[in-house]
Image 1 (cartoon, helix red, strand yellow):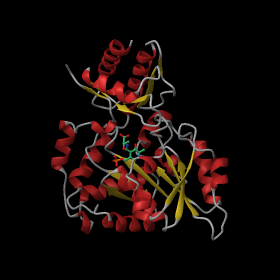
Image 2 (tube, helix red, strand yellow):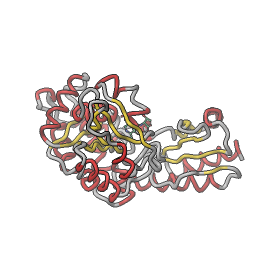
Image 3 (cartoon, protein in one colour):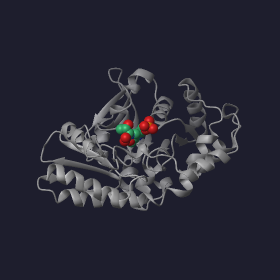
Length: 342
Ligand code: TLP
């Protein structure tokens, strides 16, 4: 029986063509700034995101933490959605690394309301932490892959600008948002001081993320990346995979989105099964009549379907489509699940 792995879009393996591009990549020591493949990727991503400069980093977590480290001082506060990745999935890095604290708001599927954000900004007083950064995530993971409407991003950027905060955009899946909405990446990133995107999610590269912003902030980001042990040497072998992913794997994200919708339709026909959010991109959250997600994923695993409990509610299972699963695979997964729970 074939295993169908829908735990995350991080599970993809580099294709043969991607591996060949990695093998061919011209290399140098990136700590000396001499890796042509890294330099090319950084320039390309700066342009894609409409920023002066960019820095290749090891992971989305490193991009987020370097960004927050650049934009804050100890004691500062970061306003973000309660489901945001740095709050939930980065091992407590905000306080542990930078001595900063999150101020969490309840967004609508992770999408923040500018009025609520403005109300959460602390008055200037010795009593309060200093509100310093507004962090948003597009697409929003815990929001079920929700795409930020561009006018909402602009309204939040305007609040941040007017109140002297920096906007940071966690764009781990920004290109999913771009493909789903038709909005160019640089438009989403326009009001952000720093923006990231990941190559190791739906784009199918094995490793790597980019952080983009103005020259001064990226110079400081380079220092913090070094401090975290993330200054790599012949990392062009990884940057080449990222460049290959940008060349070949962006437009096809639309297929992942269609496959997630097809799976949602198939699962919804099972009595008692509820898909609580519209499926906008490649993430699909499903409730199986209120049954425990932890128990269910164990049963699905026995049937060769891998998924994760979503975590924000005990009954939600998260399925993620990606370039290593086809339409037939997701429909087969839905059939196996139907035979278990139907
Ligand atoms: N998310 C992973 C898990 O950590 C939950 C996943 O499987 O979805 N920002 C966002 C919005 C993310 O979803 C992720 C990864 C990251 C940052 C971190 O990326 P990595 O895993 O490369 O550190």
